[in-house]
Length: 222
Length: 296
Image (cartoon, rainbow over all chains, first blue to last red):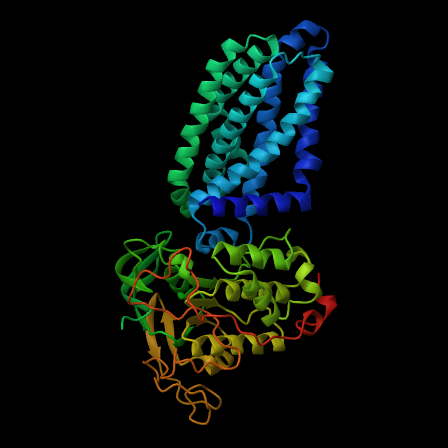
């Protein structure tokens, strides 16, 4: 299964390296979102600083929508869905591979946005260990939910509009936990943040498990 | 021995429409069977059923020993489907595509090179993005994927479509070599004369039913006694020498089917000894499909 996952992740990242969609479209979009929040709240610098965790994760979440749509658009063209079904790749391996590839792209994006909030919002990032751990947990959860709903929406003619409708409500708990964990990390009250990190890990584990168990059925129906 | 494909009264729905309405078909190992019939008759659905992509909702359907009604996913790794769509990633090169799909089914690095060489893609074209290829070159790449995967059952939907003369001849040779190596081939085609020449027998798909066709001997067909490689199975049976090791110089193109086992090779031991890709190669690139100008 892990061999299949690495094969799929490598393929997705190779395609991204050649097409540079994340680099040329998703990353600028994410930075634009940060900038727009800064313009909207700049009159009150304190509010902007207090809202940094929420704004950061909303920017990540909106960018993740694009990354997930892109990840499944790759698999929806010119007979590729059938080729995947016949490939011999384990569905769980395909799912984990997609999760790994989306996570890698989101992680790079989060580094960029992290620099953005420090520069634009003057955010202190007092507990880096908690911030990094929360980011890893949230990224895995985000990618897992995204890939699960991405394959659900992939076969639909209205996939591009359906995916946000499915994904955003499902990501509400993750947004809450990631924002709370980051608030603790930004304020330097790490002890409060670890509880939220636990929720993030639970969330990611639940969706990773659901994806591993059901991706074969979803791939058949896509 | 159990047939590689064994359909009895198979019913398959496309939406609510019964694209197969009680199809009966038995195909033995090493046989090449041509499906003919008008558009919408159910040929593609039959091929997709055999690949485990379309569920069979009634009747009996066993392929390579797997009961498609019980678990149609089990057979998928062991079949190769050449469909109308290429099944390729436009943003990856020819080589990367063949390597990805080949590795997905457990092939070795040498299999990829051999498949590219066999399809005339070993030169400059191997590093060209699939999105920049002509239709014929994409078809060749899809065939290279099929070769690299070395399936036990080839399901070819209009395999000659989009190919130039040399490409069509190459497809015919691939089918003949595969059959000689014990691989079973089911193909649909509207190019009846050409396809009939490589097929051991023909069946007609009409209204979701399968009927035998007896075209009579034609010059150059495998049933023509004048042709050295003629199988003796006639319209119903398998070729007499299927899987006997009498493959042409190209050698084996797939894993000979062992339908009776119903299991197939294990994941880590997917490649049975001796089932190697043909070493006979086509002229590379430009010569293969109309020259460099074919790159779109």
